[in-house]
Each structure stands twice: as C-alpha cells, then as structure tokens.
Image (cartoon, rainbow, N blue to C red; front, top):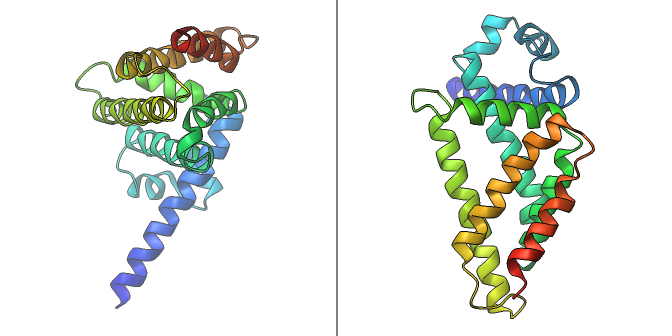
Length: 193
C-alpha cells in the first residue's frame, strides 16, 4: 500500500514541476530559465528534478506536452465540437501571452526535424493529432453547411497548421505580427468558395 502512496506523490510532484515550468518558461523564456531555477521553484535539487524526467530534453518535451494538454482542454475542448476552429484561433491568440513557450516550441520543433532528436517522435505525433482535430473540425463545419462540401479538409488543415508554425517564427522576430489575424485571413481565403 505504501508504494501506491509513493507513486501518487511522484505523479503529483511531476505535475507540480510541469505546471511550474509552464509558468516560469512562459514568463522568463526558454533560454533564460535554468534547471537550477526550476528545481528551486519546486523545492528540489537539479538531480532531484531530473529524477522525474531523465534528461533536460525530456523535461522540455514534457513541458510541451503539458502545454498542449492545457491549451487543448482550455481552448478547443471547451469550445465544443461545433466551435473547434474558434478554439484553434483562441490558442493562437493566447500564444502571444506566452512568448517563452512559443520560443521553446519553435526551437524544439526545428531541432526535432532530425530523426535522432529526442523530440522527433513527439512532434510527429503532435502534428498528426492536431491535423486530425483540424480535419474533424472542417468536416463538422461542412456537415453543418457552414463550409462548402467541396473543400479539401486535409489540405486546408495542413496549410493552417503550417501557417501557424510559420507565423509563430515571424512573431518571435517581430512581435507586432498578429498571428491570429493572419491565420484568420488565411482561413477566410481558403474556405471562401
């Protein structure tokens, strides 16, 4: 019975670390956040922190996963099945409030293009998952008559996600870029028949 309690405490501590890391990285930035600072923020040594994740890269991949979970729940799931596109735009709008996380995502996604990078599998899974959500949202809108049935849902989903990633890079270079407005323009252009 003690093992279960210990296991539950470990899960709770891991979640505390990820929640804290999300906040600290969002505020301070990926490059300006040290493992020592994250460890101290949750009352651990660096070794203790890495005990929960293995490596620094694994910690940051877990942070990205946590970010996806929180954003998906907050903006897409709560938007409801008939408002998923709106939820996607709300995630993009929210990204402007968390530049450190956008930088972490952009940095890791570029590095993960190499098959040997620890985040390679995560980004492949993430891409497939969010394309699936976007395709389902487009088809739902087609079924409801809000979008023409002739639209290529798979193609539009890929273009929207690629544009989203590209606009994040542009925004990191120039914070006056309105990611959500540009994606809305693209959406309107792609879905207008």
